[in-house]
Length: 525
Image 1 (cartoon, rainbow, N blue to C red):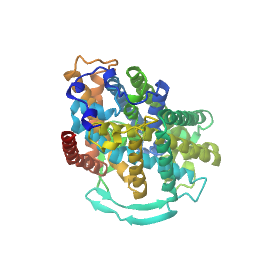
Image 2 (cartoon, rainbow, N blue to C red; image 1 turned 180 degrees about the vertical axis):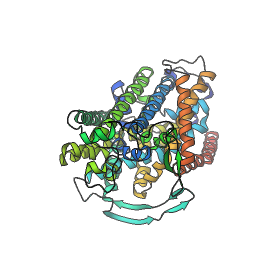
Image 3 (cartoon, rainbow, N blue to C red; image 1 turned 30 degrees about the vertical axis):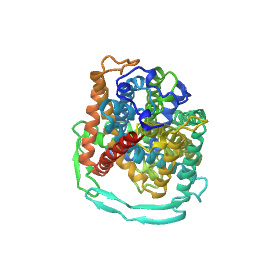
Image 4 (cartoon, one colour; image 1 turned 90 degrees about the horizontal axis):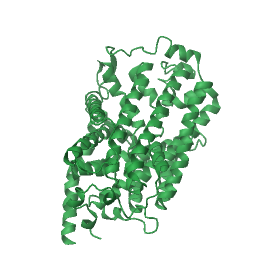
């Protein structure tokens, strides 16, 4: 079949009939429950158990720690409500890639898919898989990042202005071997059918949501600590939280320390919390396989993000109930180190250990393993649908558009994603790549929601089974807030922004080369 038969024709691009926009060859196997579980399962990884330490060090205020998560929650839920309209209009495999393609043009869709494949999806899968290996190492000490099977070399740090490149260990350790095994096993399982992948997703998402809820309930009923309550709440909750307060932030890597306002430090703190709440959009990638998508996609986005954000905010209140925010890196006990200086930033583990002793740390390790395994599965399942959609448009390897003849899953896409993810695991670059992407991720969210305004103007009569709640006010507020965060990150955290922007821009010449090759292929077909 030639690429031309797969690519949307100009007529199809202006036909917004829901049924004509569905991918007929894919199996519709995701109901509302599975779609909602995919939203929640893709969001919940290891971040909620870790990033609050870094946020605490940045904001130096219990109120602002909660505030950072509330800002993330607002952005996430408004984004999900806005995406619901696009998902109901265009229930196509590829989701956000399709929305950008149809609203702003194929170049923007390609740049998103390019960045997703190169860094966002695969880098996240690699990092989450390695996190699984790290916590498995608690039970099997031979699984370690320093236990090398094959050690290639260590890339020394290279300083380019405010950025530090390199400083990575490359090779195969027992820890990233576990990550690779997880990625391979889950990729193969997802080839064998959508229902199998969805079943794994449902089971593990239910388990990790239960674990988060258990952490909240334990903290409420047995974990409250008088020292932590006094330090965080009794006259100290609003410490350093006034709008006129000044906060110290280091510009770049090794740059000067400057004083910034409260709104600016909240924007800086979004690096950790936004990343921890990201991937909620993954359900849109699988839209071609969702039953009754006009209803189930908007509902799953709203329900999934709402539940996870509520749990995230509740968990941070529990952290403040169990441990003081402030502490010392040299503290001899968990309480003395506090949230800011929890060992290796493992705030969740510190909280459980404080409540239940060694057994609490063990339970948290199990919970994080469940969380990361389920997160990997959701990311693997969803990401492959984007490259499949790009290939159908002639903007990725043609073979990636092929489905498994028996299972009707994008088998080649799953394998290509698996191979690149495993390369990132061995290269050791995934962690640094993830540092680079939050800026780019936010840019694509802004562009997609801007596309909602574009489509309201260019296709006012299109069928919209669901309309974004709060339009145009809430989407406009999202755009303003997200742009403010990106500008702040460009100014104060250039090590997180310019590399990601460069990765996106490198996709421009690749797009023109690929689209030219696609046209030549069509002409010869």
